[in-house]
Amino acid sequence: MTGLRWGILATGGIAGAFASDLRTAGLDLVAVGSRSQESADAFAARFDIAHAHPSYEALVSDPDVDIVYVSTPHPMHHENARLALEHGKHVLVEKAFTLNRTQAEDLQQLAAERGLLVMEAMWTRYLPHMVRIRELLADGALGEIRAVSADHTQQLPTDPAHRLNALELGGGALLDLGIYPISFVWDVLGAPTTIRAVGRLVETGADSEVATVMIHESGAVSTTLSSSRGAGPNAASIVGTEARIDIDRVWYTPTTFRVVRPDGTVQEEYVSEVEGRGMQYQALAAERLVRDGLLEGDILPIAESVAIMGALDEIRAQIGVRYPGEEDDRG
Ligand SMILES: NC(=O)c1ccc[n+]([C@@H]2O[C@H](COP(=O)([O-])OP(=O)(O)OC[C@H]3O[C@@H](n4cnc5c(N)ncnc54)[C@H](OP(=O)(O)O)[C@@H]3O)[C@@H](O)[C@H]2O)c1
Image (cartoon, rainbow, N blue to C red; front, side, top):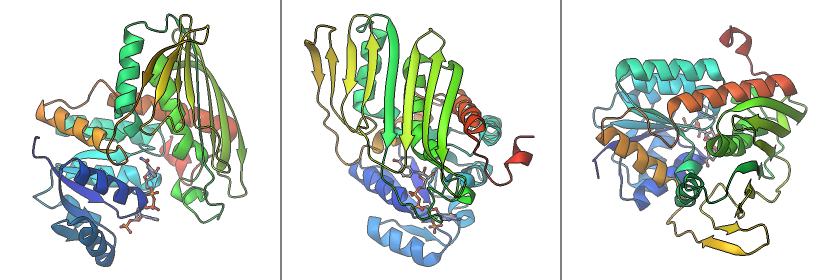
């Protein structure tokens, strides 16, 4: 244990899940900041946190905090993460990392200038089953990988004012859900060289369904699907010439997978044993990086988070989704 002291910025749904996992892992959660003292106090009481701040500014100014977890809606990530970096804090930023590539590059540059860690909280990449899958791929267990597919589909609120649907809150299936399968196929196959996307929008102008077909550096093909209107299989497959990996529902959370030969025989079965929701693995990874004096890790280097935001920009351009004020941001 490195003794990094965590501060949580915002008190919404995922902040609670993360706080619980930090406690499960025995990590040092010392502070929370909210736009209101009341919410900060309630959150601090729930997770036994010593410092409850009535503003994000007060949280990032807390000398007892080493690393800030940003869990506001995506349009606020850039401003909130910037604030933390400017106050000398390392920062773990919820997905989608930012609203677009321009904002992501700005955080990358600022963190590098300050010698601080900025990391995207793409927690799935740090889960034990994903670690094992990367080992199998590196060992060539599947032969040549030809294709990867994954979906992230959930039945989420249809209220136009909800974070998922309101453009001013970064609404849309792609940035909330589609980022998981896109980050996953990128992890397995590298950057795409060709991106084709189609989508369906709701009345607010946010996307409710997005499908992508991409070709990657090796020539392999990926398909992804996201939807905020219905729950699909939430499974993933990596198909190689010697075998495939079937990751079971829900593939982006702690789960089981099988290595299956073309004749259907199961070569390996992986059973996951994870305490809590599984968000602690990314926190442990961040702690290891800081302890080792590194500003980024191999699992998801910051340049890859930036490039993925660029791909999401391209997909949004193809399906016609723009966020308020983005024209200026994109130059
Ligand atoms: N890793 C995962 O599995 C996962 C799951 C769900 C969501 N997420 C990500 O986490 C982020 C937050 O999602 P969530 O589901 O936790 O959202 P949420 O429940 O709506 O909470 C967001 C929090 O952000 C703060 N906030 C600041 N400005 C706000 C504004 N203008 N409107 C609403 N809230 C505002 C609020 O905290 P205060 O009132 O305390 O300031 C609010 O409680 C999103 O980027 C999302 O993509 C990740």
